[in-house]
Image (cartoon, rainbow, N blue to C red; front, side, top):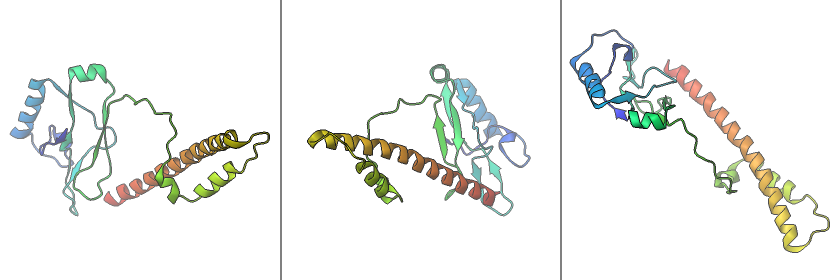
Amino acid sequence: MGDFNVTRFSSDRNKEGSISGSMEQLSAWVANVGLLDIPLVNQQFTWSNLRTQPYFARLDRAFINQAWEEVFPLCILQARTRICSDHSLLIFNGGESLQKDHHFKFENWWLFCDGFREVVIVAWQVPTPGLAGARKVAVKLKRVKHALKTWSREQRTNKRNRKREIEEELRAIEV
């Protein structure tokens, strides 16, 4: 995976051009070694010369072999919006999701979010009639944990949505 500094196909550029020797060499090497080009699913080009009349090309690629594809047949490549480089950041997705860890973990970023203290206070203040000592504390901690998990899910969704909005604005500016 990386920046190959050459396109494989004429469709990998936004401007017409002939097939060069370098393009033929790269494609021949890919075929001879038996590699498969992972599809880029969310945008056509990965590089721009950042000029007023921009030139776009797909210079960045990821390759896998047949054995890898048999184990991970749903591999895809996604590009992120260019922010401070002439290349897009590529995200490789193997098509398999990792098993999630179900243990509760306190996240430091929660401390900087509006509403964190209120969630903890409200969950902690729920009465625990008939309980005392360590059992009372354990029940209160469990309630706080569940409240924070729910609240955190909402916070992550809000952050993802805001990130999407910003990326769309950047794409619009780039276009």
